[in-house]
Amino acid sequence: MTTAAELRRRTRELLAAHPPADTDRLDFLRARFDAGLAWVHYPEGLGGLAAPRALQAVVDAELETAGAPGNDPRRIGIGLGMAAPTVLQYGTEEQKRRLLRPLWTGEEVWCQLFSEPGAGSDLAALGTRAVRDGDDWVVNGQKVWTSSAHLARWAILIARTDPDVPKHRGITYFVCDMSDPGVEVRPLRQITGEAEFNEVFLTDVRIPDSRRLGEVGDGWRVAQTTLNNERVAIGGTPVPREGGMIGKVAATWRERPGLRTHDTHQRLLGLWVEAEVARLTGVRLRQQLAAGQPGPEGAGMKLTFARLNQEISGLEVELLGEEGLLYDDWTMRRPELVDFTGRDAGYRYLRSKGNSIEGGTSEVLLNIVAERVLGLPAEPRTDKDVAWKDLAR
Image 1 (spheres, rainbow, N blue to C red):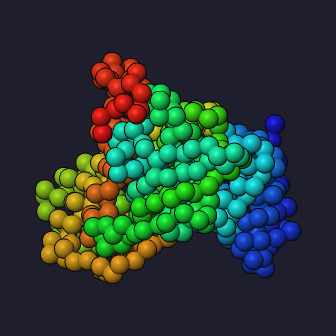
Image 2: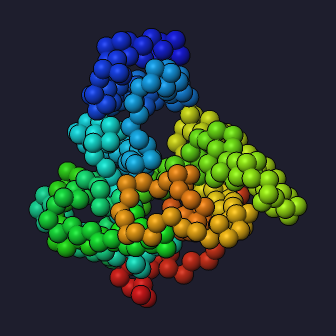
C-alpha cells in the first residue's frame, strides 16, 4: 500500500524534475497526472496510484509549499466533481484514457446536459430522445440551466432511448461532443446580469455508441453516481474556518464597528456557529468518501450550503445598509466561474438565490434526506409503473 512517506518522495521527485518556477503550467499539470499525483485514489495510469483517498492532502501540501500551479478547480468543477467519477465507474478503458487526463488538467471543460424545461425537479421525466442508427445515436431535444456550456468541449448527457417503459427505466447516459454539428448553445441571462447558465438545443446530433456510459436503458442508475457526486462537490467543498461567505461578513463586522447593532450581532453569532458546524460536517463527509462512494448524505450538505449562503448574504446586505444595495457591474458577461467571495455583497445576495435550485432543488433534496437517509416512507407515486409515452404532459 502506498504510504504518506512514499507520496512525499514521489511528489518531491516530480518537483525536482519539473521545477514550478521553470516549467510551463500545463506541462507541470500533465506531468503531475502522469506521476499519479492528480487524484491519488484513482488507478495507476489514470492520474492516481490506487492509494487511500485521504492521502491526497499529503501531496497537495507538498505542492502548495513549493508554489506549484493548480488546475483551477472552480473553473472545471463539473468535470472534476461529476464527470470524472462517472467516467471512472462506468467508462471503458479507452474512454477513461482519452477523457480523464485533459479533464483534470483543464484542457477540456465539461458541462452537464441533464435538466430540461419540462424535467427539472422531476428529472426522470426528461424528453430528449436518442434513437439508434447503426453505430450512432441520433439525439434531439432541449436542455436548460447548463453551466459552462459556452466553454465546454464535452458534456455528460442523459436521453430517453425507450419511451415504452416507465420513465426511470428508458434512459441512457452518453458523452456528447459539444463541438459536433447540431449542438447550439444560447445564453440565459440571470438576475446577476451574467449568463453563466445556458440553454442547449440538440438537433440531429450524432453520438457514436462508443461514447455511451453504462448499458442501454440503465442511464438513471449511472446518473445517480453523477448526482451524488454533484451534491458533495457543491455542498462539501473543503473550506478553512471562517472561509467562504461567513468570512466576508465577519471581516466587515470587525473592520467597521459603526455598522454594528445588537440584532445583527446575535444573527452573526448564530450563523457563524452554523457555518462552523457545516464545515466540520463536511470534513466528516469527506472522511466517509475516503472509504467508498458518496451516498445520499451529500444531499444534506447541499441543503445546508444553500440555506446558509442565502441567510449569510441577506445579513451582509442588511449590515451594510444603503451600501449593501450597490452593485458593481450589470454588464452582460459569460463568466468562466462563479466567484462568491471575489465580488461585492450585492452579487453574493443575488447569486445565492440560485443555490436552492441548482444541483437539485431544496424541496427534492428534503425528500432524498427523508427517504434515503432517515428511512421515512416514500411519497405515493402514481406514475411508477406507467410507460413514459403515456404520462400526462
